[in-house]
Image 1 (cartoon, one colour):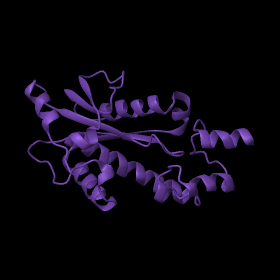
Image 2: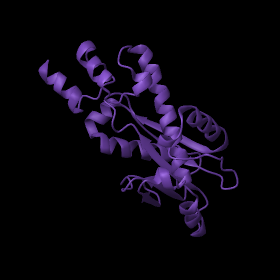
Image 3: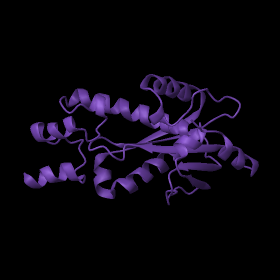
Image 4: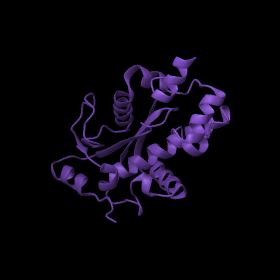
Length: 205
């Protein structure tokens, strides 16, 4: 298994960048909850072992690494809620979350490594898109971990307020149990009304 490395960051530093941020988002696919993005600047002299694409890590490992990142790194997380997701569409809402996360860093980065194939047009900084960046680039991997852990924590809190949808386990994704609960329990204020399974129920009603 190939692991992410620091080569994208090394190239940017060699071109004169002092602070290189990675940014990644999580939560494009769920029917409920925000889309979240994290931005992280790693210290090249202090990179923890085990950083990888958040999807390839156990929940316990993600939690430990997220806690480490929050203590040792410049980091920022931004959440864009369902009203903006429904107003903008999920693609633009995810890009808005990325821009807000980068803007929230203590120091403006000299260069931003963005997971995906497009740099958000409002980023306003030197940036490059890295396809499958969370699996190839350590700084983006760190951002992917932080975004997932902090979004998951929001969904656990929302699950306590709205029991029955399974959000603590499914994080709002359209599992069969979640879709059944939509039919049985109805739509909450945290559901994305522009997403087809939710929209279709609203149209029936």
